[in-house]
Length: 91
Length: 164
Image 1 (tube, rainbow over the protein chains, first blue to last red):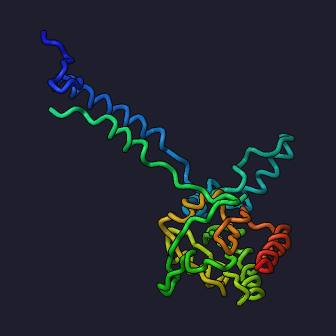
Image 2: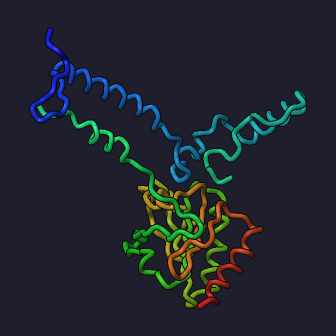
Image 3: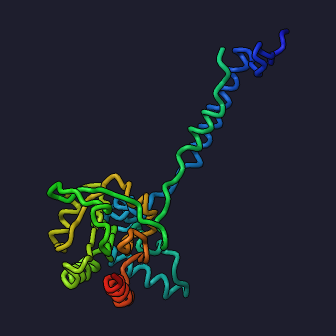
């Protein structure tokens, strides 16, 4: 078996086509993984779609407020029903 | 065979560096955006004025309360070297137009659906406002619209206008 790494005439390290393909595949895999890291949450000015009424979990805000009120009085615990500020990012 | 360009690849991966933010003491990022009628408004063209840059969106509830105040501000300091530029960040223009029918603006409103300007200013919430002095330096940053901050903000603007 020939050696995978060999020294070129100019002295820089070259590698065999097979090793190079492996290197390219490895770099592509790492780059693809790095893509997972760039899943940023939307910026404050990009929350228009999140702020739409159709993006609410509940159908009727007034009914859900009443339900939440009854739940709080029965359970003796408040909060946790929703994220403060909604999708607006203004609070 | 050519050597594999690893440094070049790394440069590409790292190259997407974030834009600089506009903090107090920084010079405000330059922008040139069009109004509804197509006329451009740029920060450079307003150099020498005290400029109040406001980022707003139709879906932003406090923005609705800020517009009447900004109208009053604009009327009070018109012709004193004061300018308001309201930058809309809506993705869909009709949403912004509906907002402006409800809450008309007497000051220039420009549109940045792509969001390049709020990115350059690194806007942290909606609405966000930047008070910029005659030399283009950010002197105050206001996040959200708070009735209790209005008086101090206007005093600040008057002081900047008085300092020739």
